[in-house]
Amino acid sequence: MNITFISAPAAGKGLISSMINEKYGFPHISIGDLLRSVDDEKVKKQLENGEFVDNRIIARLLSERLSKSDCKEGFILDGFPRNMSQISIYEEICEKANDKKNVIIVLDIPKEIGEMRILGRRVCLNCGNVFNEMFESKPKVSGICDHCGHKLVQRTDDNLEVYEHRYDTFLKETKPVIDYFETKGKVYHVDGSKSSDDTFREIEKIIGGYND
Ligand code: AMP
Image (tube, rainbow, N blue to C red; front, side, top):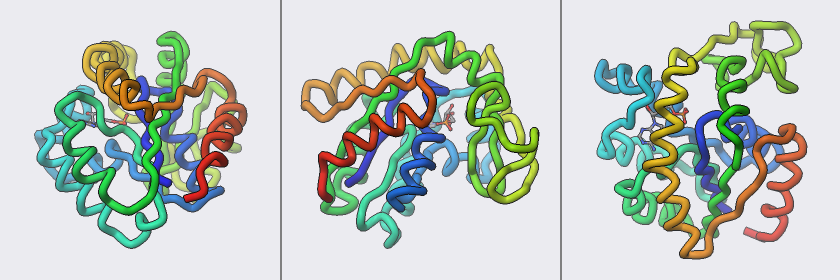
């Protein structure tokens, strides 16, 4: 199956995607991570300010990534589509990338929890794992990745000002995307404010309902 996560920022998409990847083997495709690897000044600025990057760049990155052989049996898409104009790219490129079922999962969290998570979030630039210095997903040694031993860093867009902007954008631009997919009956809602293990258990119930 292919799982698409659409949620407010800091809802836990990255962490839950890695947990699914570890247990089920589906590759975790984060649009944010794909964009962070692009060597382009304009894109870097947009990422820093939490602004949307041009659809053409995203469509190119996505079709390159989804055509790789590891996506044949399913994948996890994290952070796409985020506005109405991206739905056609999703339907053209992502839904047709393989013959598996496409499921959309929305992780719901209140804004205040997102704010707290943003301040503690640390990422490993080497292996992509995500930790939180303030919550249950703390690294064993503060500032060091449990998986590969590299230094953890705070993303430049993880500050309250950018979070406010990204949250507003979520309400104005991404919420209508969720409403659109609701009308097609493709959306599961999961409470993302619980511990990652609880959230993961809920998601496993959804995965268990599909056999491809
Ligand atoms: P994320 O890693 O998902 O938090 O995304 C980080 C940043 O990447 C966002 O703030 C945007 O600047 C950019 N980005 C991620 N997904 C998209 C998207 N679907 N469309 C446009 N820009 C995106």
